[in-house]
Image (cartoon, rainbow over all chains, first blue to last red; front, side, top):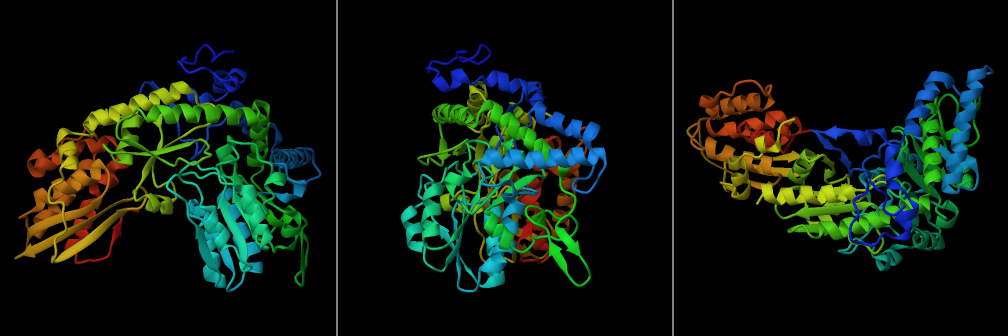
Length: 424
Length: 150
């Protein structure tokens, strides 16, 4: 299909990627995209905050409660076995999707935030001591800053921050200078939610490992946009969230190297995470149960498995190419809007277009865009240090998902021109 | 939801572009910084008092069109008012912007402040419109600590 019939055809030649990928077909799988906002079709460009869900994910949740619900890992009855099987299958799908070595390295959590807190409090408190150093980057989401600040307060370790340049690229020379034998943990974001920067994880990991440090990667924003290969990234921990990858809220993933997870103490304790309990002694369960105390978010895990199936069917490479094409189209298009300044021009970017406008504050931009049915985010995006670095209180952020098309970008640009008109 | 034209009245757009009393006022009798941590808006309101009246009032800071114009119009309206009148106006202003969109506006009491009645149609913007007012009220209460909308 060339551009597909429903897509507005523009003068730019359609590359191979969009010929192979029918965004119009994908859009039909997302019922919420039929929403009208004050009579105008919804243009959903807030995917970095959360993605919409395909019918397959919605159906998985519905079907679970209609026909499969029981508690996992304890029943001999039919439904309990069905639910257990589905829950374990979901873990297997996710392990394969991320290319983990073994399934037990995949821990279900509530999301990226909980995954990072788990590592900071379980691995961190056990292995990081006074005088040790933890390195993060200047473009972290608050969820990859605050858990390490708390760990530093608890242990007396020191937090160091890799700066980034005006385009939003990490300054790797500074990182090189920071690394030393006291460095115990390097926690970096794979794709910045505020700038879209894709960070060189393999290089960071190799350098960190060379001084004996461990590496945690915040993959919340990368997982929906690009194929994740944990073996190639070679990081020690990787965290991501289901709801940012077309799955439900309240479910997320922590990947950890099996030998590290094995040696770590439990994060939470209770049922499901033990082998045996007496009042004298408790023996913790094996991986992954040791880190999944209590009844888990069963339908969340199963529906996340359905989301992974959906992403696999579309193909992560294809999704990546489509979104890169759209990001380029959008970048070129918004630059035609007078007084608009893009924030974040890193060499490699994914899915995020953040900007400020001379005419209006981001909050007002968001308000005018909303009137046109265009959903974007205005604010500091839980990355206040990034705002401080650029000396702005906030930005407007359009972020793309697999179902966005050039019509969406055209609607965004038309609405941005309206902002200039209102605030002329 | 209403058209944003109901929100962005001409007077509001004018005060956003050319805010009045937009400067620091030192020395002053009281000043308080108001923060909206969700959107990053922050304004400091400075008040000089003379015989129970607001003899001068000014503000500094940054924020959206609604918060900035609201601070600007507020300073214009409150200059010369007694402390009791200022508090009463805040109450009236707050009632107006949180009221049902169909409720009548007490134009006599609110005067120029009525241009913000469109905020009623956009509840997420109430915090923007009241940020400087909360800071002003806190300053009159004798506080010097920053206040927050959250």
